[in-house]
Each structure stands twice: as C-alpha cells, then as structure tokens.
Length: 207
Image (cartoon, rainbow, N blue to C red; front, side, top):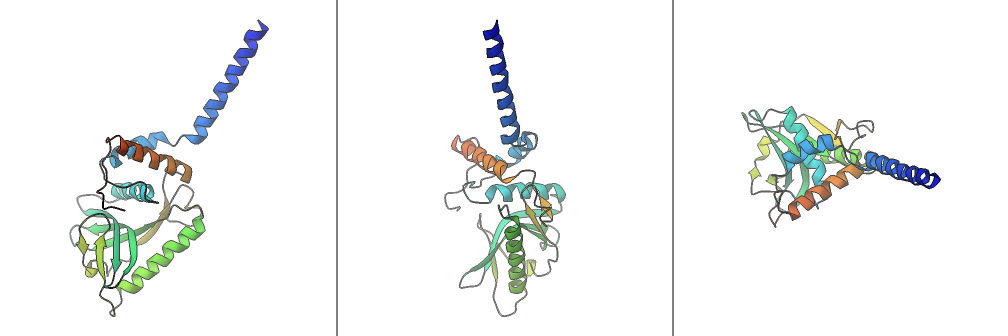
C-alpha cells in the first residue's frame, strides 16, 4: 500500500512538471491557430531572420486596413544606380491613389532598445533619400518582380515601429502577440509545414 502511494505521488509530480513546462514553453496556440491559417498559403522563407515577425506584422496591418481600400506590401528595397540603400518592412498603399500612406519597421531583437534605434535610423535614412533631388531613387519588391515609382513614397508622413511581445513598454508603437522564444517555435512550425509540402514554399530565388 505504501509503495502504491509513493508511485502515485511520483506520477503526480511528473504530471505537474509536464503541465508547468507546457504552460511556459508552448506558444499562445489560440492566436497561433488563426495566424497559421493566414500564413500557410503565403510563400515565404522562414529561415530568413525576422521573416516570421514581418509576416505576423502584416496580419496585424491587414486587420487594421480594409483590403478594398488598401494594399499591404512586405519588403521593398530602394537604392540608386550604384547600390541598395535601405529596405522598408511593411508598406501600406492606398488603392485609390497608389501612394504610400504608412510605413512600419519591424524589429524583433533581443536588445529592444537597439532595435528601436535601428528602426529610427532606417526611417531617417529613407526620408533623407526619398526627398533628395540629387539622387535617382528606385524601389523594388524583395519577393517579386514589382517596381514602384519614387513619387508613390514622397508624401508619406505616417510611420510606426513594431516588435515582439513587450516591445511597447520599450518604446515601440505596437507589438506582436508572441515573445522571441515563441517566435522561434513558430518559425520552426512553418519550416516543418513547408518541408511536408503542406504550406506554400518561396521561389528558390528568394533569400
């Protein structure tokens, strides 16, 4: 009888340990189930650092901006004839005017302060270049064969920053529903899904 009680107590401790581990390690699957369904048909390489953050940020903006009036792009690089100068993460276009109305920089960095500083530096670099009359700036999607005219970007005045859970407290404008550990798990979920050919894969040329 004593042995039975000891075994039962041991099993209970194992069960409790597993439950606590599951609670702290498993991502917020209530949110992830919905986000996963929105991501599974979008071809994107999740081996690229920051990809999962950008795609989850896209989802947040798609919920904010009505698809009938706005179009959201992820990843537009700009540069002159000699080099690429910078890259924009989330870009919101007005379908009516085809002009950019908002740009968001996505930074899921362990050092949130450094990420925020980098995002602000990128914004300043963009504004200095897009308003320059000394350079011929061109814009190109990083994921498809699509170019944009500089005039589409000249009048944008709305900007924001977005990071992982907890980044608002660090000074960001918005944050995702997941912390860095959860984002890593979600990236792996997408990669495994692509390996099983159950999720859309990017073109081989995408980096």
